[in-house]
Image 1 (tube, rainbow, N blue to C red):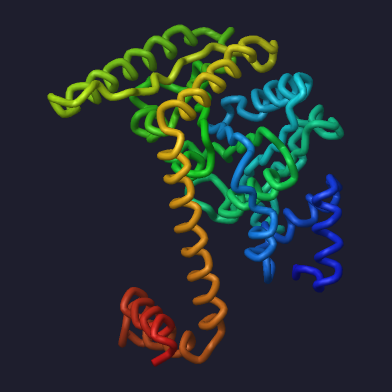
Image 2 (cartoon, rainbow, N blue to C red):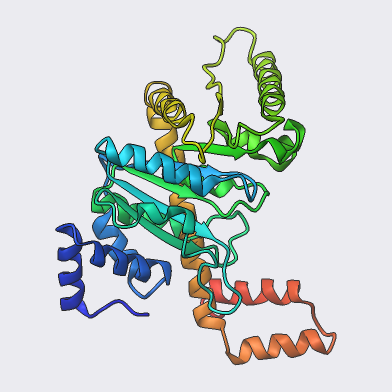
Length: 335
C-alpha cells in the first residue's frame, strides 16, 4: 500500500487532526505496512509535549492479559480518559495479518466513544512486540489519546521491546504460571513495574504472590549492596504485586492506582532520564529500520544476490561472509 498523493494526504491528515477515526485507522495501516513516506507522516504528527502515557501489558499466554486490558480500559474511559489500545497478536502464516485480530475478549471496547482498539501482527518480531507498534503509539498520541495500552503477544520470552516503548509495564501471571524463579529466567522480573496475579480466586495465587515478593526483596537487597559506599541509597521503585480477577472485575482499581504511583515516581525521580532513554531507543530503532529497508530495496532480487547465493551453494562462500561483503558494498555505495 502506498501513501496517497500529496492532495489526498493533506486531506487525510486534516481529517486525522479533526478527530476522524477512519482517518486514524487508515494512517495506522500506512505506518504498519511501512509504506513509502511513512517517516514523513510520523514527523508531521509527532508531539513533543503532552504525549500520552503508555502502559505495556505482557506475560505468558493464557494469563488473561486481554481481559485485564478490557477491564482497565472500560474503567478509565468511563472516568473520562481517552484510550488507545494496541493489541499485538501472532502473525497468520497465510495472510500476514493478526491471527487473533477479532479480539473476542475486547468486543465490549469497540464502539466506545473514548476507546480505539487496533490489532497488529508481530510480523516476526522476536520480542513479541510488532516493530511498528512504537510508531502507532506516535499516531495515537497525535490523535489526542492520553492513555495507550500496548498488549504483547505473550510469547513467554524476554519482551524487552515493550519496556523500551512504554512508560509503565505490567506483567501478568496466573496461579498456574509456575514459581517466581521461572519468571526470573524469562526476564520478566527485569521489565516489570507492576505485577498482577490474575484469576486470583484459583488455588495457588497466594503462593505465587509470596514467591514474587520474596524474590523482589532479595533483588532490592542486592541492589542496595552493590551501591557505592559513600553514595546515598539508590531511589528504587518497588514493583507491587496485586491480586485481581478480570472475570469477576476484582482488583482493577488497585492495579490502576499502582500504575498511577509508578507514573508519579517516573515524574519525580527520573523525569528526563526515562524520556532520554526512550528517545535514544526510538532513534536507534528508526535508524536500524531505515538501514534495513534501504539495504533490502537495493539488493533484493539483484544479480549480486544471485551471485552470492550461487557462491554459497557451490561451496565458495558462506552466508555470513557473503552478508558482510554485500553490506560493506552497500555501505560504501557499491564500490
